[in-house]
Length: 277
Image: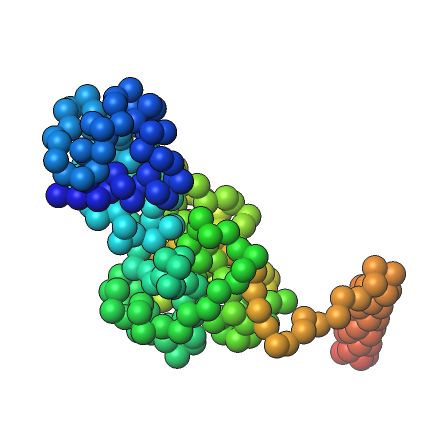
């Protein structure tokens, strides 16, 4: 049981004194001190009051060593993503933290993606991945970076590194936004998503490159989803043509097509006249 150690941990995390917490709970400070030091047993009413004050379920307060969780995981509990509190089955995310107990950003290279498809939930496998930090990203969220290959998401270039934020509730996926999806059969894919989960239990995935056709992916084929945040690449995207130049190019193509049709039409007419003679 971790109730006493969790009380002390949560109080210090919130930078509260024993006087602050005891006053908020409506009990005397010596009584609260007894709870933190394990010399007093809390009543059911006190457990409920502590749960409401720290926004952590009673089962988690008692059964989980909260000091072992990362800041991201603690934030998930506080935001209500608690299996005991909500009655839902959480998707377990294996993660790593630095010396300050802040979540690392793990790096999944192209070579590592095959292993990631089977080891994504294995803490030992995740601990073997390279890690880094991006100081401009929120410490309250969980990020991971994946290397993509191919031309399906041009102008994002081949071998770019895509960073995404972990999505716990797939129903929150926003249609038209980009996501990194770990699938059962294809492994890691990076696509624009259309959220059809509520209606049809699936996502429709689109490439930025129009030569690739969209396809549907049932939720049973999905293992993880990360929403696109940014990408890093040593390659610059190709230059954009000015609007006037682009319009001229389209007109030129249109004229060329018309010329080819006219030539073919005259050739067919000439052949018909020759046959008539």
